[in-house]
Length: 425
Image (tube, rainbow, N blue to C red):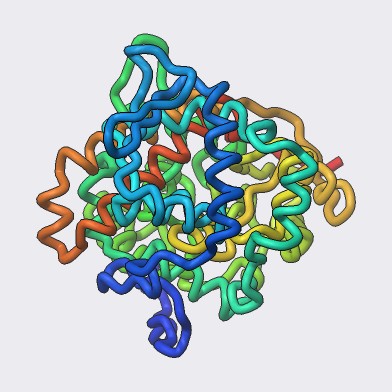
């Protein structure tokens, strides 16, 4: 099969009129100045002090005053600027806590260890009644501008995945896989674990020689290359122009260019019929409004008798329902428009909008915690290489917090990740 190059989309640069962060340019709208919210700051401080009484951490204020239930070996959270910290927390806890770390209002040498006990008690740190009140009066809601329409999804993806191919190559392994690895017993080799994950996904989709495989969400081409090495023909789709460019280069270098076609195209625009469909950690970028369309596309594009391999980050269903409209720090700075589904939401969408059902599944949650630890350690160890690309200290703290925050969620099971094999009922 001759391979056509990825069709190039129009310039997807962020519209300058939008007040959104541009991390690759060192632009952080409003971040330097803490909000002024004196009454909310008082409430936030009271709730924070109450919460840490039961959390095994140590919180140290200027002057040396300490609170928290942690012992001498517990992680230490140092509050550098208490007034700014509590004003940010009061103005919006779901955004302010992370922003405070970005600007240095608080610091910690072991952020993943610190965030883990907080994540373990996330639903009970604040009394449920106060959570409901806070959600109504204080927490921001998802901006309509970040809805995942065809154009909106392209811009949302651009804001994260098009930061810099060089940035991702600094901390990812040689497979350039930006999703959960699957470690073999006794092994801590990330590249081997990523290849094991990819092979497991291809096995769940039943990919063998001679098949025509559709991949929704190219990444940097690792899975497409592996499928082609099995003898399959691959059509892989992405809406990230930067990913498409590097994926093509990697596919060429692997000697699989004659068997892989890269398309710069949205899943809603996909056409054709395929022996297998694979999609790895793509559904999190779809948004609840478009889940029926996404799952229906998997069904529509699959030939009779074929299988779908799906890898998806998940969260508990009750927490998903409560928080699905919240605008969080992750939404603002890392994954605009993103929403993590629950297993129940996936199964319900399959029942209601497709003829597909789950026939096999496995959880890789603890493996994702290990994957994130690898990424965070490598990112910090190679920070000078990242800084040389033009990223500033605010970005360093943002990325460290992002990776530690996610690692903590997977450590305690607040987040999970599943590989599913789907077949028609």
